[in-house]
Image (cartoon, rainbow over all chains, first blue to last red; front, side, top):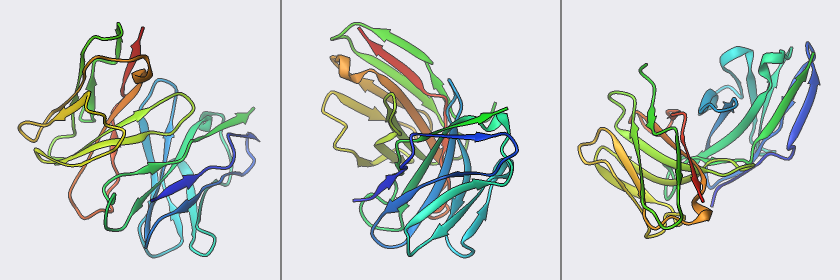
Length: 116
Length: 115
């Protein structure tokens, strides 16, 4: 079975400072990894994905994520946080093949608060 | 708006009643997914369609739940004899069939409250 852990329920960061939202995963075989963001009363919005290739993935709104196979991690990062980045962030994994390979498994989410 | 559309946005129902939600995916997306999200949790997979075929169902999808996608376009999710534990946000998503590595696009969800 595949799973995702987001160890921090909440992350607080000052505006202009770098931010990191942590994610570790467990899956059989190679993973497809995703980050989504959820604003209040809004659906999930796709930020970025890792499929294969370069371990550093760049996505929307200046976000990037680093895939680390040995640590089974896929941490979300941004060099300079904005107040408008405050939202709920979800990491998700999909198996490469086999049973459950069409379903995304999400973490519990991390609430990011950027302080002005 | 060419995104995933869900209707209604909010539904309040009495315990024991049946409810039905509708999802219109992005045009030409032949994969459609239903997820359920409760407060403080990430979305949990319920079921998946490719065109009109329902290919995967989660163990979360009890026999009170049924989903259809009759013409491979819009989908409905029906909950019979609702229970308070069914209160949640029901999310629909769609994607293309270019392998497995395509992201899913989510609708804004239907928030169900069972009283």
